[in-house]
Image (tube, rainbow, N blue to C red):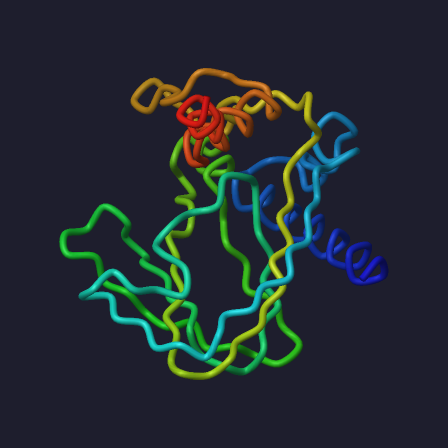
Length: 193
């Protein structure tokens, strides 16, 4: 796992260089010590049981969401299940399966990258549908340093497209997002008292 973690981080940094070039930044923009010098990189092993999903009834392997951070690398087995919605604002949303490719990572863009790029890059809305087979994947979340400032990149703003989000520290942003999406368990303590 430690070897995988180290090698996945190198892949994440390589992907960040491609993103930098796509945004007309210097290739090493995200390699700077204050950005990915000491990244928050989390590896999560996922197992989806051999259940069947039924979106009409709200039954999913994992419900629709986008990841909070910069990018997520997904290594999967060969079992279909991951779906993406290319236009998360569309009504109705159109979902497409992502075909697993042996030895390849699937790259999901995160909400932090959407913020950094002033919505030039949209975070990947995704979900997992169970098809009656066990499914395994490894999610590798790559976030910048805790103290990294996430603000509209210079190449992503113009007079006609000013920054859509105020600058924020990575640690503050991630803390807010976790708080917004995770239950406050102290509520249960108060009810028991």
